[in-house]
Length: 197
Image (cartoon, rainbow, N blue to C red; front, side, top):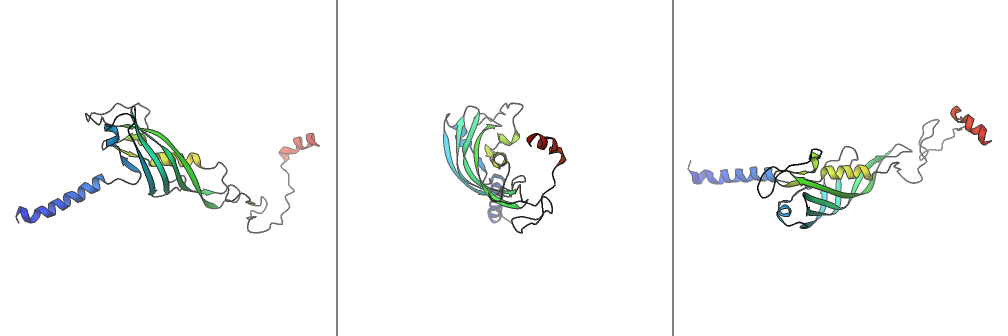
């Protein structure tokens, strides 16, 4: 076989490998152009990403705009995103979906100097999820995960008028009328009840 015969095969293989190595997910951004720019250089990005559900919140998509800005020491990511989450109702214990608004406000630090290629010194307590890698790529996945956890309601309700579960028989009061009489009192409250009467 001559070089002319195998050259197209080799070149197509190289392109496949190159695209596999440098393919970014929808939550990753190459910020080399921002790091090369002057302080304050920024880019507004519209984010419309779907991904595998996150463990803690079930979040699987985000929509909105974020701003990436070159600041002293790295890239500042800020913006508001709408996302989904899956929760368990605190009254009836059923799963339900809700919409969250996430506030992103993070600074990503570069692992290497964009001009010299030398390793950048990073503070000891730097979270590895907020480091711009050697390919000048930052990944928003951890920032979205943390923001979604913070945005979850402390006492999620499937609906404001959820009747919850009967403390006696455990039936869902949203689906059936419970005839249980809730007359048993917790004996620990007897002292306070006597004081109030």
